[in-house]
Image 1: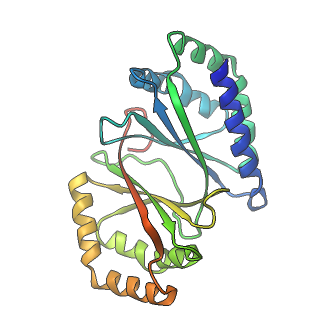
Image 2: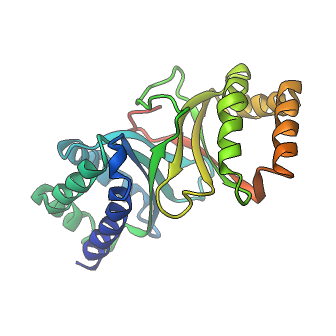
Length: 253
């Protein structure tokens, strides 16, 4: 039962962070990243496909999207859940972890060893410029990109302003599709922006960012924002990108 006990501790910790922002009573999102144990990657997907996703729904969670890195040597599962509000998240996880169907599925799937070696959970709140996040299937299925920006000291507001006033429109201009833009709760809330884009393909993604980087409007917006800040709005090596493909059971593709 060590896995379950650890899981409950993690849920409790992230729940407390979510409650701290309860006054907003807005949608609460959660980015979860699981690292599969050696040889257990397919078993982990099978458990989500056959049990976990439907039990999440049973307990009031919204399955937004499930993704795996395009790099097939990276055995992580990346997924996003949504809840009506922070309190609903706490209630949902409490019910899920006590559900006899989940306990039976967990026990059966781990009879030959645990499926997960690491769980990362980040509570997210949508920025004021984020679109409403809804599961959507593209034609053909899209490639996704999870981007994490660490702002330079004191510049998160300026970074958000640049996205709000310039970057989003320029992303759209160059064929990128917005999924959602979030600020994490707790750690990183003062310097981190996390967002998810959709592209038609990896090649389209590369072409879009090349055109975006060369766009005179982007260059002017960046120059003006950095002049105002006295330097870059992001910390050194503060832009991270993870290319993703949706799983077969993801509601967002």
